[in-house]
Length: 63
Image 1 (cartoon, rainbow, N blue to C red):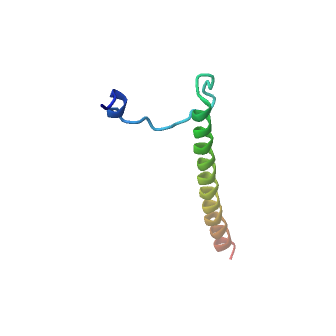
Image 2 (image 1 turned 135 degrees about the vertical axis):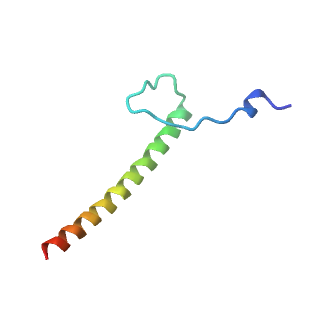
Image 3 (image 1 turned 45 degrees about the vertical axis):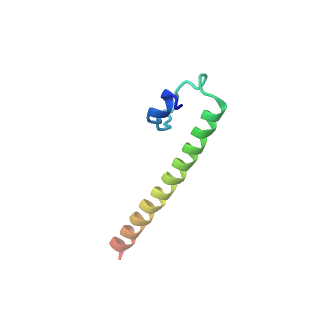
């Protein structure tokens, strides 16, 4: 027999900077650390791409 929880959609893990962490379990904290580490990598990649575009534009306009 399925429980009522099986029929409810799972909440997407999100994190708000500065939020209260006292009610989160160890597993929830670890999931958020994984989420934030992935987001940091995504931000680094976006920064590198924008930096490369900016550097190319600067080289073009200097010539």
